[in-house]
Image 1 (spheres, rainbow, N blue to C red):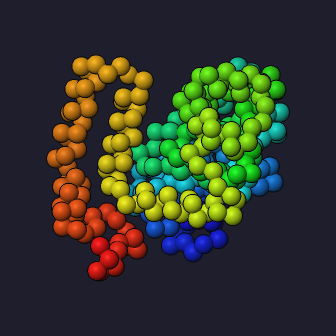
Image 2 (cartoon, rainbow, N blue to C red):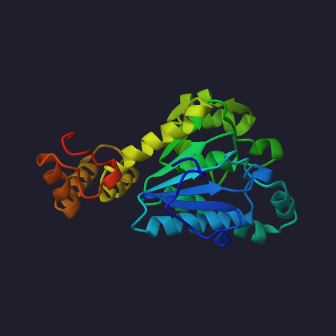
Length: 283
């Protein structure tokens, strides 16, 4: 599923996007950044198209998981775009920054699980994309940097997501030095969940996608909302009451009833794709 050359059951028309390759396969919407000539760097077109693609996939009931990838993940901001921004006034820069912030927010708040498959370079905004995804798997030779300070800039719009991923202490180093760091370091500080050899990346991502497709889609959506509701909050009466209300509501859903009935009946729940259901006699 992580490899764009594999057989797909459907694809968005290539003409719809000029900076993305979007493919649908077995409940997975693969969104590949497709500006290889600039290492998938951001410009205003990519930002608008990625916002649209993520929003569309999040609203599509046939989509279970979003996978973001690219042969060289994302080198941050495109140089030509940066040249244009340098000539902008405040109003134009604010509109440009708001578009980028909206794209990041759309990805971070997508109701479906999101996975980043990281090859090559992930600099600046590319690190922000990774931090916005629920799960990030990287090749062991991938490289990372929050290099904005070297350009006299700050990682402002990506900042909240990166700090949530790596913590304020690590951000204090990498935001101000702009130094490059390895996949091993990205794993150590929490930006990546797993690192594998480059030749094993597709297989590891496919394994993860299979696991995601086994879980209830409504439960996954509610779990994402739960994390946002409880993170960094003190464990006090309002939070305790909120969590009790959430599980009471979810227990009464059709999906929960189906999941429990399937478990007791030793069968796969209805939401599991047929290709992932065990053959008779193997349950």
